[in-house]
Picture (cartoon, rainbow, N blue to C red):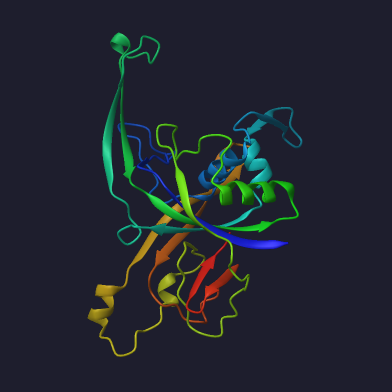
Length: 263
């Protein structure tokens, strides 16, 4: 049985490290992305991290893949930022001073790290579950009952995550593109979003600019197993009304005037 659910996650701080930044400062993604959410879900139901060995096809070498990713990567998810400023969260730079002798090869063994950190990030997460699958049923029950096998965290184990507002009474209804629509979640941007924004009747262009926003970020969508590097796609988040001609895959209508995209 298919079931669409949602729940809200929140942390005091978060750090979703961008792999292409190293010196002089570590930079975080602003938005929760799918691999990070799968890690949180894996912790909740007790799946392990980067410890499973898989033989790479046609090669003798082996790649490391986390158990949670192997077992949950086909899960359809959607992500909606909450309590943000047009999709953006406040950030601050935190300096860590690790002075234990084995921390680094720096002179004196003193390792200094500057880290960009999210302040009070929160997101609404949508999951399309198949309750006939054992792991999906376990995930459903743990989320509903607020139980976790391991402590979930947002990017690093200093930043624990909790969740609330569990909801499981959505009607599973794919949007038919028979009217203009608003999408509350992140959108996978396959074509320019400006092509799909509907004109607000009765408002001047200047007034529309004041009330509409669009946020863009290139985010991880999964892993390249052969290299154990992120795969990326472009995402957008907007409060604008979109034209019915602007077609999106896996778009679900969760109420009369609101849709979410699952990916």
